[in-house]
Length: 384
Image (cartoon, rainbow, N blue to C red; front, side, top):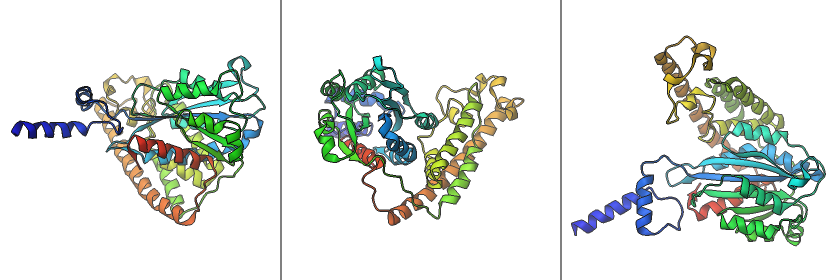
């Protein structure tokens, strides 16, 4: 009897380290994997490849992507896998633009999988439209072959492809591309920019069905609307304080800090509310800059203050000892954590206010993406 109880306790302990996936692997193998994972940091990912049609008629789509990026990121930041919060990686492709190489299917990888939210924003804002041929099967297959999707079956792996021409165009079969995606554990979610039934008639729904993704139709020319709240000004003031906690270092430090400020400006260019949404993203666990900020870098397992070179340091730290640098960075980290906490608290009030004032916008890019993500995430036991 004691042996049975002991076995049950050990089994329950192991389950705590299992993935969110309901379809768990079989016993002996699974226990060995769980035992290994117990000593590893969380490596759960939501991987999103965004494939955007940048032909002439898609100005509204690109505008929505720019305007709604931070709201989408914020919604994903609330996701949980058990008690853990999964990390986010976003890749970006454009297709259907005459400025692109015709021999390569009028396709361009704008950005491989990245967790650098400032860089993602920068690349989105760099997109321009021009007439062209839209080869959906080709761009899906290209993203499957080029991107590092990984082999973790419990990661949430999603392609979102948006456009308005027949899904069947091009030499590469969309059916083959969708089946390849399904085989690789990647869902293809199709967003037709236009009439719902027209999208069905031009095979956009079929493309989603073949990979167990979702089909959606949106009004891509719909202007993003915002609700101003009593908390916006306070959050924006905190954004200024938050920026002051970054300690740029290394060869890219100054450049990346300038990029951070540039994307603040880009967000505010759409509206004050959009700038607020970006600030909320910057206060979440998804906004990481360890490649240029000492406060984030310090949290990395292999980082060592002793290995920093004098020329890599900002002016205020060049003549400091290692102990003094550690103390300076610690103070900045504590300051940042306090500011981020205050932003998150204000944002909770802001979300409730917006919910009370705004009718659900069911016909835009953000709503379509979030609905599909939550539907597919539910199957892997993610929660919000």
